Image 1 (cartoon, rainbow, N blue to C red):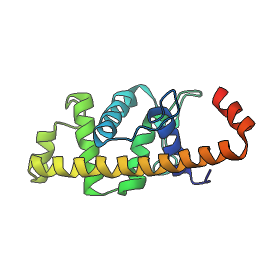
Image 2 (tube, rainbow, N blue to C red):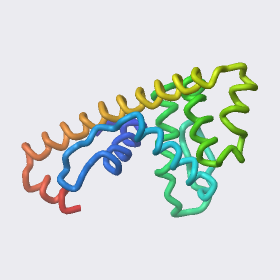
Image 3 (spheres, one colour):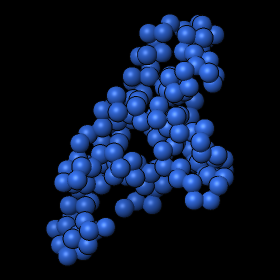
Image 4 (cartoon, helix red, strand yellow):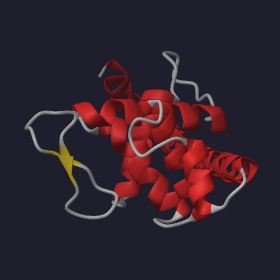
Length: 163
């Protein structure tokens, strides 16, 4: 696999959320991306993290799993750190995950920004679709690499399946 940390991160997401027991890939949908980001915001308060670099979360407590936050970091890779789509997606997910108690409601944000709610929703949907497409692309590349491995070294692939 590639040495790119975002590729590895996306492959981790693909392995945990895309692959069924039979090993067949189910494509990500925009709705699943949205649900996963909301779940990450639900998890965030219980995982004390710091960020030594952009798009990287490191647990303050040793052994704490930060993988639920990978989708948030991956959104920066796909959409860009300050893109309007990413901002709309994160505001929406945070608001839904915290019932507006952290950072305010979606309505409050739209009023402060002078934005129609439909504009925020279009940006959020566009962001989710782009992230899903990228995850599906990376997932299909990972599946192709796994199939190539199976064809080239069946006994090794059997060991991988047992893990």
